[in-house]
Length: 356
Ligand SMILES: [Fe+2]
Ligand SMILES: [Fe+2]
Image 1: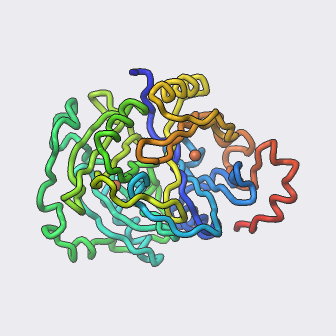
Image 2: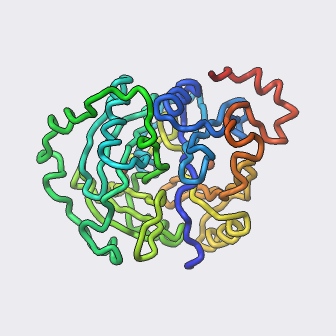
Image 3: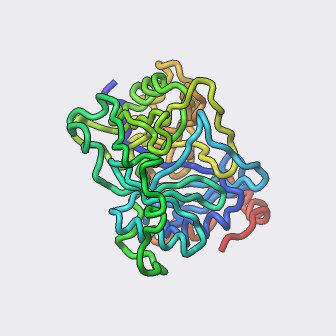
């Protein structure tokens, strides 16, 4: 078992109705690097955009399928509620709040979640995003070497009805933020939060299939009737950044997620290389999960499987990375296609709306 511990998130893939609008939001407003402009390899008449840090390192990647004709999705059991991006501290978070609100994006928070501080907003398709501070971390109410042991009841002052919502809403940065300053750099995926209607089974899944460990049992701080569990790559001392998967526990048979725009399509975790991925595939099958064959995604190799509640997961290799077909420093500059689609480049390009 011990060898099957993911290093954390590789990427999260979401669904957009309009690739240009998504580009404007994630590249121009959030300042992420477009590291690859390509097509959905399984549906080559639509875009697949990859955003991340400068080199597109695992854990920094947000990717988007463009589904121009799809209907709006809905969060629920088996789906993802929100994707949280990491920011340094609360000052930086207020800078982001100011920059976003000045661009007409509604921002909730900053809310003190105890373990970190959070602001919330949605992308143009309605995907819920969060920006969460690095600290203070999960050891504020349990010893760092014994996390996730007991149910932690949040301080009442952090719960609805006790918070000063007007004071929270009024907090912002005193000056406009026309440029993204170096301190505002987004530190990859902080956590990903979904819904399940069976936390016990989810616990089995995350621990056995992905090797994650429960690091916090608490309550949803916006709805304290709902449990909120957090798993991560945790060695008993420290938690690896970009490895924290969390779930809200809804009652049995609660409303299920619906695929569509503004929703997360799947969550990918990391495997170091193809050999580890193959061993992992056997391990997942030994748990009774149906796992796809290895798919060549050009920038990494992928296998896919679903959790008990239908959530789609992927395990993607760290390499070879985004510099296989473009020089570092010019990633995302051209329309990249895998070798097997190159013969159709003219036809594919003619069917896509050019992006600026
Ligand atoms: Fe969150
Ligand atoms: Fe993926």
